[in-house]
Length: 324
Image: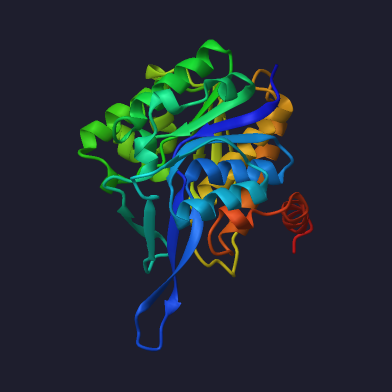
């Protein structure tokens, strides 16, 4: 019996996001709960979907904070494991001049890397409609094996599988290893959310449509969504491409979690309409909603705790239609 909409497996960590400077000119960082898979679940939960998370944190204050936040959000924590020895993973997020971010990770090792196959409650996956994962949990063992067993379980159980490469080069031993593991994800997903720079990195092609064509030659991915930042997004489905412009926000603070917010909205629409009969109108509606939600999150610090409400998203879309 499927009683969960989406179960995700992956990293749950603290994003220390730069938030001004002290009187002495030192950078100040705010400890925001984060981790791409849980950000996706947070958006889905905000939209009324039932979610479960599988992952590992340290048995420390940060781990306690993260568990409390998931419970507060309504994300299921039955699959959350605490490691008695390895601390919760930390990420420092520095803002750079072009509005992008520079990441530094304290993860050698971090608890999220230490999730073992024997600790995964595979029944949580079997009771779901969609299984979502990313590549960060495949950088190292034992988590890599846990991910692949989870992916196999999802496939055997007939779930839709959603994959987001979420490339973070500093976490990989080599670029070749990153491409190998990300290609595993591409070979085992029905829904792919990929960013503009990731598709260029992966295929070596500047044009996104050319990049998607290259992926389609190698992988049978039914829905590919390319997020393009302020330029909006594209969806490739059943031989057609649909592009929707982004929503530009004057109050943009930083972009952490924007892609995850977008991904959560895409999965929400797949749950709503299925993956068999998406027409251009439904795809355009999906991208518009996802673009609007992603733009709202860029006006806030952090992501997981501050996902937009449906009403906020719809109001922004209505304002565009009214020409405001």
